[in-house]
Each structure stands twice: as C-alpha cells, then as structure tokens.
Image 1: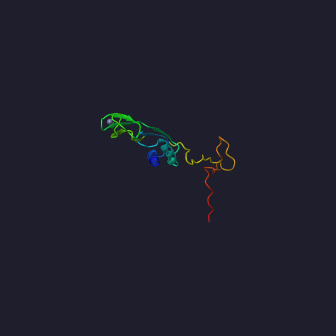
Image 2: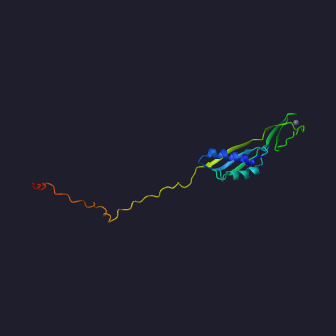
Image 3: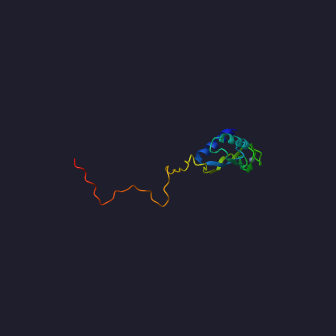
Length: 157
Ligand SMILES: [Zn+2]
C-alpha cells in the first residue's frame, strides 16, 4: 500500500486545519478491510510530521472490523480479512459494506504557549545625573523679580 502518501495526506490535512495551534493528538479510523498497514502508517506519520505543527503529536488508530454481504446468498457477516469469502456458501462474490474507510476522527490541539516573541525588557528610566531632590520639597525655583517695582527706565539715548 501507499502508507507514506496516506500519512502525508493526513498530516497535510491536519496541519492545514490546525493553523497556529500545536497538534497534540490525531485519531484515525482505519477499517480492517482497507488494506492499510497500521504499523506502517504510524512509522510514516512521524516521518512526514517532522517540521510541521503535527510534529510530536500522538497518533491513535482504531481498526473497526468490516461488514460484508454475499451477493450469492445474501448473508451479511462481519469480516476482518481483506480476502473475503462468504461463510454461508463459501462464495467470493461478496460486497463490502464497511471496513475500507480511513477517517480522521478527531484532532486535539493546544494553543501555542510559547514564550512571547521578543518581548522588550521593561525600561527603567534612570534619574537624571546629579542629586535627586529630597522628597517632599519642591525643587528650587528660579528667583523671581520682586513685584510692584517698575523696572528702571531705560537710559535716554
Ligand atoms: Zn454466500
């Protein structure tokens, strides 16, 4: 089978939906009649997830059994083998009703909790050089001219 391509498709689909979130768990349903080798999927999944938001996610796979119906005698039966023979008549003309599916049943993500990117350190404005004024006392103000006294007249030219 083409497990690598399937794993790639799963990772692509999940990564596309996940956006900025980091994927922690992916659950797949792979029918037993799909012919997909689950061990192979798991191996390929880790390979193709490298460098994507899916990297490091857990992969859980359930393998539901198949349901088939014989076209010859209309018997319906469960079957876990891709090579299906009717248990009623032994015929091979059997319709597979289910068990070939491969589905992404659920995906768990966690919102990115990485360190805030390059947050600037808090800026501390140093006190201007020189002596700080003592607390509670206003800084000395410039001397004001005494009010009420007219300025001396300008000297006549
Ligand atoms: Zn049959």
